[in-house]
Image (cartoon, rainbow, N blue to C red; front, top):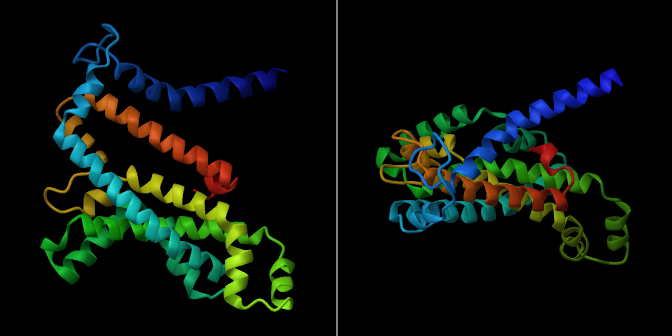
Length: 258
């Protein structure tokens, strides 16, 4: 009983350390004061201010555009890579696909920055380079999820399809694709989540004047943490948590892979 008590106390302390600051951010997004020093009263004015902020809305549009394009491309390429790694087990492909996942983000960001500047020049940094960078590091997560999905499936299903005269394309379209679809959707949602709230890689690969939500929030908190920052952080947090929850429901191993 004594050990159980200490385990519960330790678990509560850890979760409080993780989630109490998030709860404070959410609560103070409704605070009727520009200062976060004390609670004054409830208001929705900061969300109205947020919706009228053109710079923030443009940053949100950029983030959504980058996340949608990057997750779509990464899902297609990651699915192909996951199937190839499971079925043919090439020696070089896992290294190429999974290295961006294991590499520290700051190292990956600097490497991509040097590549873009060396290959295309300083002026090449734009939304396009951010999209390419996000595809690079999201692709590996999709490949891991799809390969994990395939690893848990019965290979006799594919053999039965071929024995019944199905071509490789028919086997993929009618058997493989429907069975791995939950993993593909989970990978797409995970890629979208990773892309929309990425800061480090976006910071290195975005050009002058290119703003995303994380970059815009960073530029705002350098002056002061206003309730408007809390409001946009709350909305971004809700989107991220919703995506992770859906992805974890579709593929139980997705969070462990992340």
